[in-house]
Image (cartoon, rainbow over all chains, first blue to last red):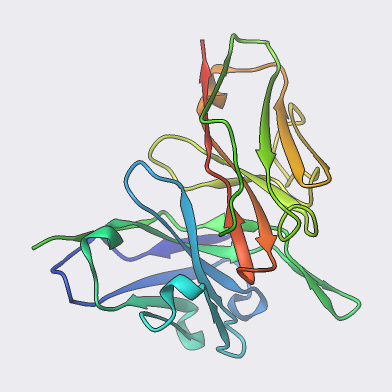
Length: 126
Length: 110
């Protein structure tokens, strides 16, 4: 079955970096963009960016530009999200999610995220 | 700063119909389609509605979506106890150049 399995919980000190992995199975990894979304405790969902696993191209939310790096390893169908210079307000559950968009007539149409990982809790604390 | 505004809470008794609104702007709902997610306690979000009113395979037809102008709504008919969850609207935002999520609505089944 189609699934995304993420790496385990992390505890980091302020100023450090964290790298979260997301292993895809049950579908062609390079056929779908991969998003990263985070959710702070008791808060809503926040989009961080996406990666095209086929080309490696990325699109980061402006808020995270310069601090986030999304990469992939197609040989093991795994996407990665690395966030640097961590602060206490980066404490959140981080999700990877498969894009549900489509290209029609050369134009891309976004239709949400249809498969989600289980989430990775990242705690930033001194 | 883009915002998709939802009521913080909604409630109903089993069997009732509950509607959740989502108010946006011309840069998101006004020019792109709307998606809805259900997040049960302690779990990852689940895509409930895409392209304003389409249900992914496996989503009961009790859930329906609509959009008009810069607003959208999600309706849950025949409310069930397992529908108790947080619900988020979302749409691509041309200013953000990415998807933007609503503030979320907690649905309680009384």
